Image: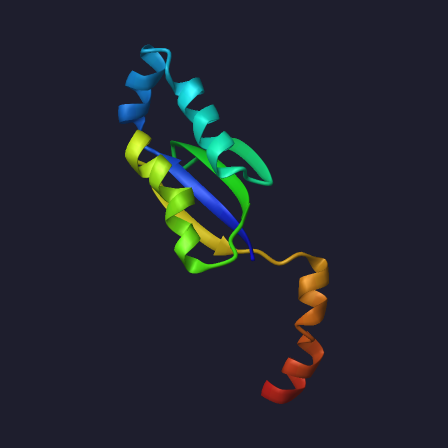
Length: 101
């Protein structure tokens, strides 16, 4: 199942990791280990934020994606199920509308 993993990284310990010159290496290590389909880096609510498109086949895989961020950066992780246009088409919204309207 395709999911969006949003990682909110607090200023500390990340700032110290930047000062030490380790931040980039740690991020690359996490990305290599978790192999996201795509990775985006941005700001959200004043925090450094990473948005990853990942494939999760079973619930027990979730810690594999979250724990590196928890342990290395004391980050918060949020998981959201994603649908593309084809997935939405399969949902048959017209039928659901008829059933529940």
